[in-house]
Length: 217
Image (tube, rainbow, N blue to C red; front, side, top):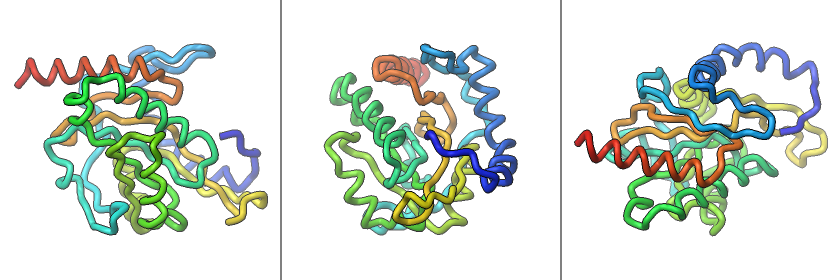
């Protein structure tokens, strides 16, 4: 997001720097740090310390944990419904990528949107948002208390911070990392797609993942 640089950013940004290092190291280690005009993919061994238990509330108002999604690979994106551009763009890219898979393979994956703005993103707000035809058909929205969101974001090494914004009706917006995580059916980290990964690149990696899973089963 192109937010103005303000002093209020400094403490949250510094506090979150350690969380960003893990994801950045993964990208750098595989030569996948985004370069100008490029959107390379990230391949990892699945041993990164990313992911873990969470307790959140889905867009129907039901309390869920990671166990509710066991057995299904998850595609996890941290964002918020009032995001003007980055979040809807990323979810549209994910929908496009999934649409390139055969229907039976597409249905294997569970896309999740975890809100980093629990103050505004109630289950009711999320329910309307995830119903957009531009997003993945089975997208599930997750929110919770600020403490629950913080715990989930820390587990996935996701940076986010509230930023005061007088131009917003709410008086603030959210700054956050824009990454899509691929987790396997046991909740183990597999891959991460940077913001500028294309639908074709993501679809190809998902196909590879399914083939790898089939061969190892």
